[in-house]
Structures are given as C-alpha cells and as structure tokens.
Amino acid sequence: DQQVKQNSPSLSVQEGRISILNCDYTNSMFDYFLWYKKYPAEGPTFLISISSIKDKNEDGRFTVFLNKSAKHLSLHIVPSQPGDSAVYFCAAEYGNFNKFYFGSGTKLNVKP
Amino acid sequence: DGGITQSPKYLFRKEGQNVTLSCEQNLNHDAMYWYRQDPGQGLRLIYYSQIVNDFQKGDIAEGYSVSREKKESFPLTVTSAQKNPTAFYLCASSISGTDYYEQYFGPGTRLTVT
Image 1 (cartoon, one colour):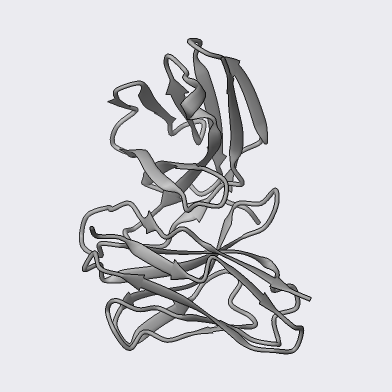
Image 2 (cartoon, one colour; image 1 turned 120 degrees about the horizontal axis):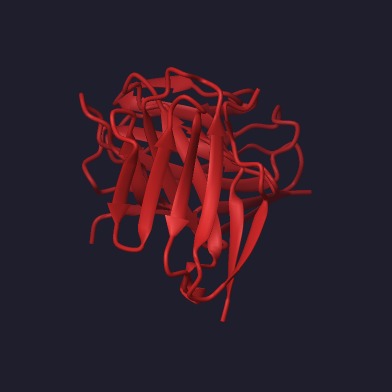
C-alpha cells in the first residue's frame, strides 16, 4: 500500500507560468517531507524540504506548501523554465528512522 | 569532490546468475540505501543501513542481499531468486542523527537480465 501518492503522472506548463505539483500521503505520522528532481538516467537530486511544524518553505523559485489536515503537499515553481523539465518525486519520513517513502513521480514538461 | 558513485552504469546478465552492484560514497555519511525504480513507479526501498555492520530490510528485500563492512561501501547483490531483476537501481546516503537530513543519490545502475 503506497503511503505517498502523486496522482498526476505528467504536467505540461508554458515557460514563465506557474507549475504546481501535488502529493498526498496517508500516514499521519510523517513529519518531514522532501521534493526531489530527477533527469533521465540520473539519480534524483534534493530540491526542497519542509518540516511538519511549518506550512510553507520557500527557496528561490521553489515553494513547498504543507496542509497537514488534508495530508497534502504541493510544490510551486514560479516562473517555470525549460530546464525545470524533469520528473519530480515527493518523499516523506517520520520519527527520524532514516526511512523514506517516495511517491511515483510527476513528469514536468515546461514548453518554451 | 564528494559524492556517490555507482558502477557500472549499465549491466547485462543472464537469468540465473547473481550480480553485484557497487555503491561507494565519500561523504562520510553513516546511512546508506538501495532503491529500485520501475517504469511508472516510485522509488521502492530494498535495503538500508544506518551504521557499519548493520542493515535492515526495506519493502522489497526478497531476492536481494547486502553487506556493510565499510562506511563508504554498500554493495547490493541481486540473486537468482529475484523474480523480476530488470530495473534501474539507485544507491543513496544520508547523515544519520537526531535531525532530519536529505538523501544524496548516485547516478544509478540499469540492470537488464535476459
């Protein structure tokens, strides 16, 4: 049973517009959430994270929002650039057991 | 430069053969992980190790084995018991402590078994 879900396998956005990637989770014990970006044939690279004590974390063009009551997090990219085209994974962890649960990924295509 | 190396990038094996995937890190991280990625699926945890000479099964450990004799190295053996071994394998590492830390990933090994 997948505890972290990304229900949109793909998303296409025009350059300069906002990209919103969504992630839902089922385990209310999760208290740390991360987003990773992955290019084909490469390993994922860390993008941004958020602790459950916050509802927003911002880093440049990337903002992650956390809605604990809805068990939902989202990644906003503004403005989107063609170089942002990649697969984005959300991940969650609890209790600092160093065990991470990943979603299935959303492939973002930013059109020039 | 610090990082994680996985070798080889592509690996081909005949069915019934065991194969070992290499993972080395020079980040001085205590924790190391092995994931498997299949098309349309997320990363699924095979094994992880939080300290040398200790490791735990992940969600899909059947047909795999690992060792952690050195802090820098966490090799994964795909045995003939693994029913669907063809996949993209990713190794990762992270700091292990009282705070939360992100994982750093290697470039991956694509294993094809025919």
